[in-house]
Length: 141
Image (cartoon, rainbow, N blue to C red; front, top):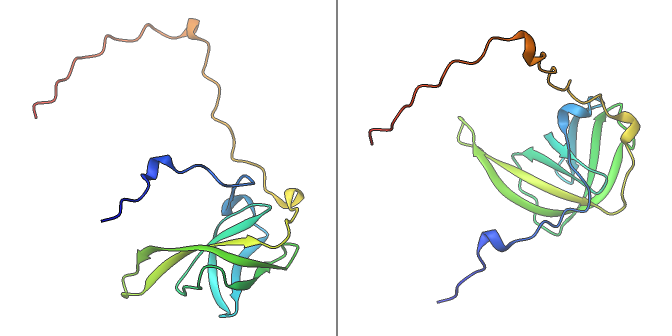
């Protein structure tokens, strides 16, 4: 019997921060080649991309990432770093998360949309009535 490492012991190996798809509106879709299936962008960084698709490329395989829309660069070469099952569709088709590490880093900072608005500042406390005492609830189970 072999015992693997505990999951909690794994260390962060990312070399760049991830930007969610919503922050990159110039990417309307992603296509991984070979395969040419349209994928959904999950996040992107200067060193790689995470997409969701129904194909499962093998980790280590060379791919070309084609960005649909006005994003530049339009294509980037890389290698599949990881794949994992994301979900099972209503039609019974498996969806995969595919992480691709770019061969060369890209720069796209000027193509980012503004981050969502920060939460509004709280009004000054001098104008508010004192909070009511919280009731004490107990879990019966």
